[in-house]
Length: 140
Image (cartoon, rainbow, N blue to C red):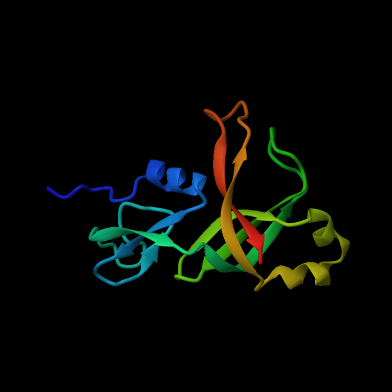
């Protein structure tokens, strides 16, 4: 019997701890799903294989968080990145938030910038069950 979850959330985050970005390549349509889902996000197939992604991509959009949720530090940037392999993934952007607030036009220069994925560990808060591991993108 085929194992249903080719790449579990635990496997995904264990890889991320080592700055490896893992995804799923669909054997039916060839597209890549990341972060992992039980089916291909493009065609719905369950015929998937685990693949390591380059972690390289480009910023599609971002937002500066001035008023964060409880337990988070203010002035951090969340970005949406299209990976070179195709999928889009959200994460933190390792970039000086003050530069983004200086002038709107200047902040738009981030759109299209090339980035590389790593990770950051965020502290636990009263709403979570422990530390949180999230993708962290650095401008290259």
